[in-house]
Amino acid sequence: MIRRLLLLNGLAAIGVVVNHATGWGYTAMFWWAHRYRPVTSPNFDQMGDLSYFGLRSMEQLIMFSIPAFLFVSGFFIAFATKKNQSTVEWHVVGSRIKNLVIPYVIWSTIILLGQALQGDGVTAVEYIQTLLFGRAALPYYYVPLLIQFYLLSPILFVPAAKKNWKLLLLITGLIQLGVLLARYPELLGLQIPVADAVGRMTPGWFFPGTIFWFALGVVAGFQIRPFKAWLDKYKWVFLGLTVLSFFLAIVDWEMMLQRSGEWLTPTRTLLDEFYSGFFILAFMAFQTAKVPYAKQVNDIGVHSYGIYLVHAPVLEYLSRAIYFVAPVILGYQIIYQPILIIAGVGIPMLMMNLMNRSPARKEYKYLFG
Amino acid sequence: MDREAILLDYVKNELLRGRANNITAEDDLLGAGLIDSLGILQIVAFIDERFNIQVPDEDVVYENFNSVKALSDYLAQ
Image 1 (tube, chains in turn cyan, green):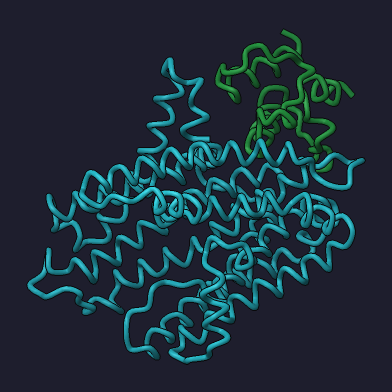
Image 2 (tube, rainbow over the protein chains, first blue to last red):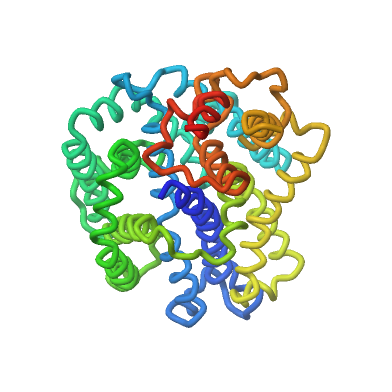
């Protein structure tokens, strides 16, 4: 089962790139429509057509990415805990955080410098805030989030997982569910002050909204034998529920869009969380199921942190270049999406491979983790 | 090369990319932050490919993987 973790990590890394490629796909479809059609943007005429549902399906398919990263990270914490100790040692956690922070600060600074060159500079206070809350690029919230989980591991996750793992899963599941439900009134256009306040207090970079996925990884790592037996027993159920929740999540979101009568910023729903969980469990359960291009996916899994950090600016600058140089491509998602996804995975991989073969390979860790 | 030397070479050149050439088989790789979760998974895959040994999930624990010597001793069992 453990070898599946690397594959899962690789699929999650591809998934993160696909997720942001679909984001640029929506931008091209609605906000940049004037670049390839005689309309005024934003224009939502294409909502509901084949390209739109193609994007939605891709976006839904890879919803498991961040939960999968957190699951794998939680599993590592269990591994890094010595058998005869009550919790993971702080210096192990500290080393892991240091390895995350240095590349993150470097790439955040590069992105902010790029923005400053375009006349959108930040003050020193804004720079610190950007780093603390992962605001340099959309996906960067994940780094402060993961650091919080690592910091909580020696005092919360490991002792709780060792003492009463069922209670840990129950409580973290309820916390995550509560945060998720608090986001619904806004999605449904309702005004409920308490829910609004909870929603505002739990942004993506703050741990309560994803706490269950990390806890599940820690518990799976400590309870590997019963976890495997449980997975094996229910693997067909997990597979069936993965397929069912995939379609239900698409229908659910479309109903919310129809109800609102306007474009809603993509937000994780309850069904997205169920789909993510069932996908991870089904993927781990079918241990011997072959994954196409497994060697390449494993390789992407090994380089996942570098891809995570570098793909965001690659996609942004590439999308903008297409906007100016070849806007006709924006009207064809079937061409636009493969360009973004291949570049989003390929350019970071190329950079990492080049650095790994250069005299500067000793510094690789500081740039790509 | 014996198994320990092959593992040490792999850790130095592939996982650490030559940035800690002075490490020994006894050094604590995890405690010193030299390798992370993905590093462990890479080692498990390498052992499978290079020595045709499938490490059972239950044996992928800190005690067996914290140093090249510990790993080599475990594989010798």
